[in-house]
Image (cartoon, rainbow, N blue to C red; front, side, top):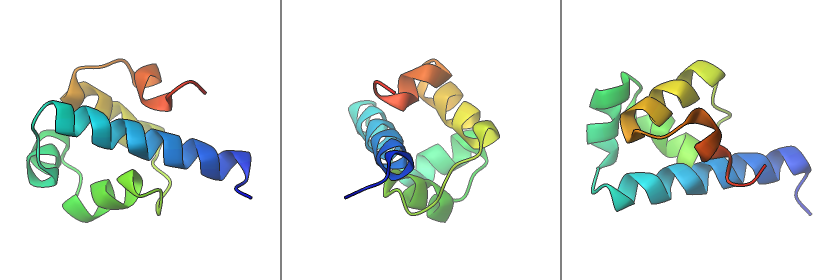
Length: 74
């Protein structure tokens, strides 16, 4: 069973991936928009890395959503 924190990371990752794909953006395009590496973005989407608030803010800005929209109900 996943811990609540792991569930949160998974929810954030899924939300970011869904929003990115809905906008037709590749990881490479997101990397350019956020100044984050493709590797880090991929790890965040797969819940293999915990994103800082600063990184989440950059992602939210690139996707034109509120920071809270990335939390998928948490």
